[in-house]
Image (cartoon, rainbow, N blue to C red):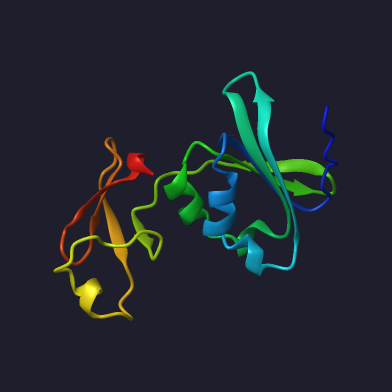
Length: 144
């Protein structure tokens, strides 16, 4: 069995859907930070069957948790201090998400104005539907 040591300071992203940890790594831009990251793929889980885990040795405040919540709001965020879990953060779908997804409507102003941010607003929380702030183009988050 693979053994990955505990971290002293940082956070652990647990209950990540199996096979999606690299996507989360990219979206959180962890490659741009100077910190240690352990990616554990396809770990056994009683709850999920298989899961991925990310262990990150840096301050959680450096992360955009709205991006993480948009990708998968079922992920558990464990804050680690002195080698112990001191807090668990619950993720909720953000009301607005910026520059994570791009509007596919060719008539949207974001297609013409290259510097304009791609902003999507949560329009239906139950169905996890977002709409472009500018043209109302629909994006179903469950299609990620």
